Image 1: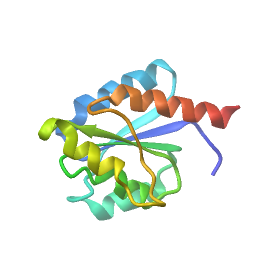
Image 2: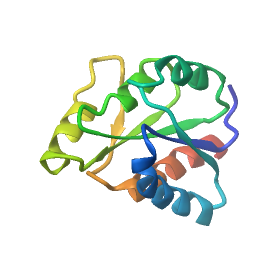
Image 3: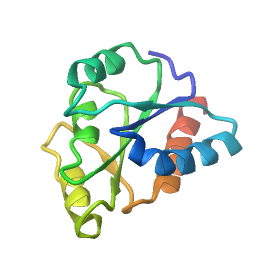
Length: 133
């Protein structure tokens, strides 16, 4: 699939929208096409799977707290880059951080700092620049 320069920001619930909006602002400032989608790996697994399969995004940014399954769920179902943003819902976000960075071999998820949605957007922009060069 050729690179179009589109990013999908996936959050598991509306509670995570403020983080998604911060990433969206960075992408918007750089003129990057993107969308925010609310789909949970736990509550909407079939809908999420269908979305991943039909999405025309080049990169997924997935934000999750607690067990933080969303980034790994997406990464296990696509070959496109996935950037995980661990959210501080409990334990200072350490539970989410460890869940995202400890993915099994063959299911990579790039991970940024806890609640650092902006860095996820900046990383997505850098990856997209590789497509355009």
